[in-house]
Image (cartoon, rainbow, N blue to C red):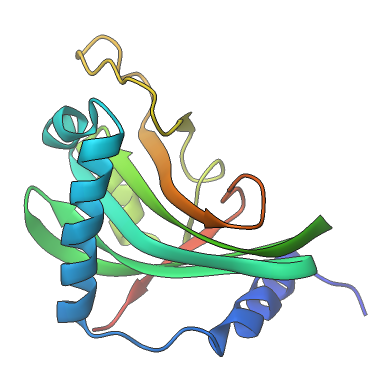
Length: 179
């Protein structure tokens, strides 16, 4: 049986599914608010970047784990200004020499209204496939002048805890949640 990328992602998400309970929209909103405070206090320039962006997706707790086959899952909120416009899940899976578990947070900043609209209208969105992304390291300073924001999406991974070195969501799929 051949393993497609989608099958791989779904099997990795299913493996983590038992560890993740369904949360309400109100619970997600509370977690997002706390996560945004952590982001703004630990990654310089992100608060200004959020005000310059067309929208911001915050996923406060992505859980990743496995042995050789790893999966990751998290839920968050897509915000325009301070208003939540959608609840979003992220699912990822990978095969490789990895073992352990970790949790981390992710923020995506959509630079243009067009990129934000494509994200909201898509039936599943993948970074690197549907939009070019720039990764900003935790602790890095971000220059947010209008001339330096040249990528459609900026990604920040922060608040890492656990035993897997590094966090990457390449090939991750973002989907709308009904909450």
